[in-house]
Length: 308
Ligand code: CP
Ligand code: NVA
Image (cartoon, rainbow, N blue to C red):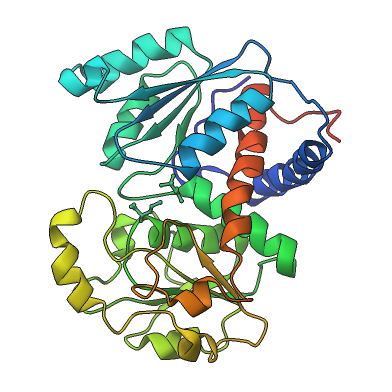
């Protein structure tokens, strides 16, 4: 089987996501029925994390266990990576001992270098630039609630961070539109995002204009991991970018609200919206488990001809 990595959203084609979402539906249903499904017996996942995590860590560890395999969590603080072992050497060694690797780190270049020297598939569990596992779950969640995302409008309000860049890639893969509204000084840099063009996004200075007619409104923290020194300045710069009920009212009446979590109530999103009826944030979080189980199955076993 050809070695495949999942480092950014556009590493997969749309038909591959369609296959993954079909598998996700089946895997989720089996899980809900307490039916055992162990296609990855004796397989091992190494999880190398340089940053904190609740959802990503738990969904990969629990997911691998539920598929019959084992997950080993490696905090960079405890490994030789944390003492300066070259990432290329770590990749050569780790990938001789395990079947699959998930990495959460800072610079995307680190995960690229690891993948180039790995014998086994590598999954991006978040870098400063991208968070493809989260957007895979978000699009699956949108589809569960509203059907196909093709032709729809997603409003991104806030920072031009890893989540924003991944939504922009996803818009090209699934053919939808992203309305992006960021404060001055925090604009997107499309040339750094590996996009094929500018046809799938539109920039808005005013966040209220960006949400008009949106099918989905989404945001994220104002300060991502690694940027903590800027927290106070960002609170000031993003003050007009809180997704509140007044802003949601400008979107379509059946618009959904998403946030990858963790969230700060009454900063980037009002408590009323986060905990309100349009919010599907808990489904997004749960679907990390189911979509990533389909992803691990696909990377290790390929497309199953007997897929249920
Ligand atoms: N959304 C997400 O990736 O959450 P964690 O940082 O808790 O993994
Ligand atoms: N943009 C956030 C996402 C956390 C899941 C961060 O990188 O910290």
